[in-house]
Image (cartoon, rainbow, N blue to C red):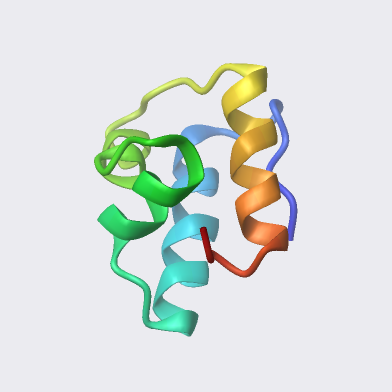
Length: 68
């Protein structure tokens, strides 16, 4: 599962939420480990636009399985 810059915010939020739920990781912990922002998933659910560097960091965290 990879996040791209062309994905709408609601789709990114859905992917991240499902990833966290499947691994029993709190949203805030994933955001903190991925990009240093515990509100990451909540903000994306609210329509936050992500910069390319943020998307890269999220994809790295997804590849690590959400671990720091």
